[in-house]
Length: 313
Image (cartoon, rainbow, N blue to C red; front, side):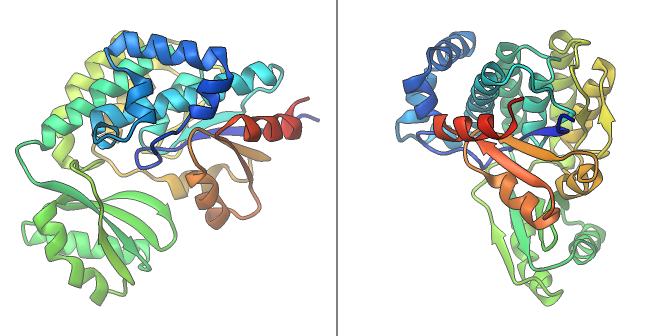
């Protein structure tokens, strides 16, 4: 009996200089995808990703770079294992767009343009304010939510943004408000409250201005071609229609990413998860969320060969 597989994709923060270089140097398909993606949005992806520069950490450039490497990894895997089909697709934040692309609902070049624009919309919504994000470590979800709720009652702009695993929740909002709450989180039991190197506040009300422009772009790009359902970051439930994708990804901009809850929801429905793209961030999270869920990762040609040997029929 064939294994049930979740194809998964990480989000912003998984980028690194040099990611995907092994693919580029050893695969003509990877070279072609680099070139076509660069032509599509006017970016030299080889220079952006392989050379030390500040742009790779700017949201509008980070997002298409991550998605491109993930789609190359996924394409090479599918070429190596054409008979292996996903039971479902799942991504973390930006990774949900890669999941949508892998499902066939959007062409990878459209997806590169879409997330490039998504990043620009997000940055624009935060340009006139000092927005940021903070990782809260060692405090349960309810404790973090309580501090945020009390702060909102005092007029502060801070919200839970990423439910990554037990004891690790990222909050977003005004940087000054986040800094002012550092002691409150620690008094509630947090081991650390670490301000992240982010210039945007993802998955909170600050991004409301980005919702309509993003929805308009998605309407012109997403198609009714889902090879398998995608799990929503917002609801933790599966969707497989264009209208659902547009509505849920629009909402995802201002609602928290429920990654932990999503993995808990699918853990008994799949046998293996395969993470595509740079690093193994989600593999590490999965190990702590659902230790019995085997998670593999495809991040270079060597890991591609290993995973192909493991799952190819």
